Length: 202
Image 1 (cartoon, rainbow, N blue to C red):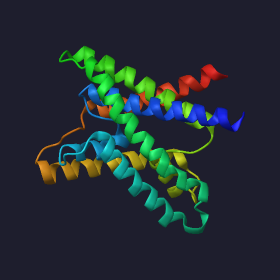
Image 2: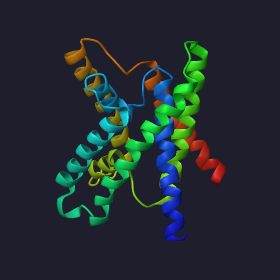
Image 3: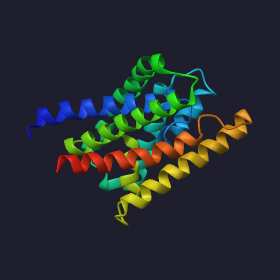
Image 4: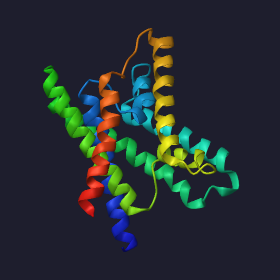
């Protein structure tokens, strides 16, 4: 696959990830686990979801560098550029999906399902492009560098982010914001859709 073609697929993938996260969040049933921390920060700061996502992902990139040290590849610094695009795409996605918000619970679930399907497609294309990762996924790869168990590390990482988000939300806002049943449903659906897309490609 040509390098230019991979870049195009990767940009589409990041856009779909941003749109999927936005749609899942606009369902108002709780955001995705990986976005729980930046979303909680939107309730504490004047910044948009996209801006807080950029900030958190820069932190993830710094942690990667600290963990990998000499094993951190120079090409992975481009994750910073990916982060900027990702944050912008999330804010664009929030504006697009705002028109589909509803107070009806079944409609909320439908938007959550659609958002999870879009996010899973974005992740699948990101893997297919085999170019770079958003810093969150890069940090999981860095943590699992020695034990090679990406799957378990990913689950523990997402769980830790949710716990940290809940603690921060309770400490500052004195209530849980941004995490609900949709957070768990989204985690299950995204994994399910990724497996489905993988089978459809075969």
